[in-house]
Each structure stands twice: as C-alpha cells, then as structure tokens.
Length: 317
Image (cartoon, rainbow, N blue to C red; front, side, top):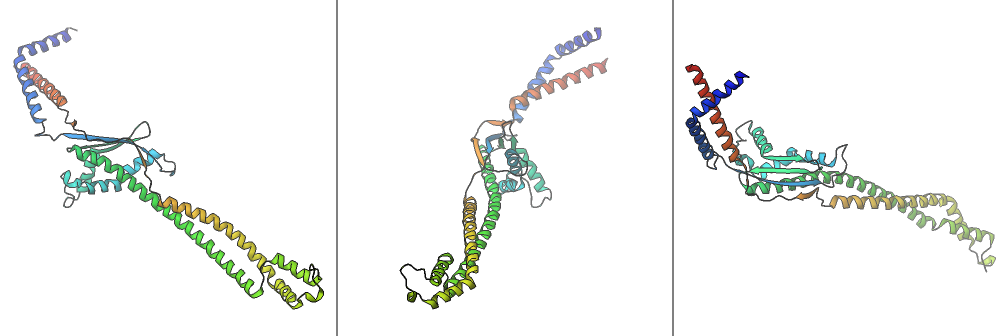
C-alpha cells in the first residue's frame, strides 16, 4: 500500500515538475496530427452503401437464398467485371501487367474497399469506400447490376437446357404424330377405310340385306365384298393406328404446354434482388477519423514523454 502511494506521489510529482514539457509535447503532437491527417497527406474516403434481399433464386442444394446471394457477390466473375468497368488496377495504382502478383494485390485492395456483409435479417449490405464519392455510389449500383446479370446468365443456361429438352420431346411427339397420320392416310387412300366402326356396320347390313328401304337388287355386292376384304386385311391396323393417334395427341398437347412454359421461362427477364435501401452519394468522410487520430497521437506522445522523463529520473538517481 505504501509502495502504491509512493508510486502515485512520484508520478504526480513528475507531471507537475515537467508540466510545461508535457504541454508542449501534447500541443505539438496535436498540431502535427491535425496537419498530417489532412487531405494533403491522407486522401479522405467516402462510403456508399445499399441493402438488398435475394429474390427469384430458386432452390439450389441446401443453400438458403441469402447464402446463394453471398456466394455470387464473392464470385470472381463479378469482381472481374467491376475491375474492368472501373479500371480499378489504375485507380488503385497497381501494375497487373508487369507484376506477377499484381492481380493478387488488386483483389486484396478490392476486398478492402468493397465489402458485402450478410445481415441478421437475411439480407446483404453492400459497402464501397472510395476517394471519389460519386465513384463509390456508382460502384454500388454496378455491383447490383453485375450480380443480376451474372445470375441471369446462369439461370438462362439452365432454362435453355430445359427448353432444348422440351423442344426435343415436342419434336419427337410431332414426328410420331406425323408418321401415324401418314400411315392412316395411306390406309384411307388405298383401302378406303375411313371409320372402322361405322363401315363395319354398313358391311354387315349389306350382307344381311338389312338396309332400311333397300331391296336385294339395290345392294352393290362387289363394293360390299371389296370393303369387307379391306376391313379384314387392314381394319386391325387402322384401329391400332387410330388408338395410337389419340395417345400421341394427348402427349402432343402436354408437350406443347411444357414447351411453351419452358420458352416463357427462357424469355423472361428477371431481377434477383429486392432493393431495400438504395445507395446515395455521400460527402461525409468515413476515413480518416481526424479527431481520433489527434486524440491517440496526443495521448501517445505525452505517454512516451512521461516514460522518457521517468527513465531519465531513475538513471539520474
């Protein structure tokens, strides 16, 4: 306890005895930190931000929509599009042509100043810092634009695969329908079988002479015999083809509906974000925080001056 009181007394004594020194050191540090934290030495950075919800992503494996969205935002394809659009290599003063690690450093700078964070409300917060507030704002908009374009391209690929599959099925059914139609047309033309059921009834009536109001001499025996032979020879084939025709027509209708739906999905231009908080051009600096730099610099300078004085005092004893 006595040692503690003694240490406090010594510290107070040193502070009072050298207060002018500490005032000068603190004041000098404050002035210098104000000067060196100005825009002349440190370029101020401005921030633009937006909050978006995922939309129309669909199910993919076991990932939630926000997890899918975050992966897309972190994808190299979107980063490359941003780097190319805003010429970020030159903007960040990184030589990617002659420096083998140039792209590595460029991506590090990108990740430093362009951040996308998942919020607790299952949305994504896009933060962009730049020395130009207008550029920061435009970069936020472009990230959202490239995200929608990239996801749309991927969905277009899947939709095209589905469309081609539906088109293949549709064309195959159409081909089968044409084939059956040609076979039936051939039988109708060569064997004069139009409707098996009704023609069978007519042949039966002809043989039994049961036509209403008909006499025995009014029935054309040759035509009846010819039609009877045709029905016996090709009637079974006609029935099979006719039933097959009805089956294919049902398939054709279903495939046509599926094909039109796949075409509709492929042609649809969708967005994959719901913009909750739109970005804006902000002229409020987020870096450097000058008051914090001044406080830390002043405190550090006075603290080290105090240590220096204490050491000098101890050595002199």
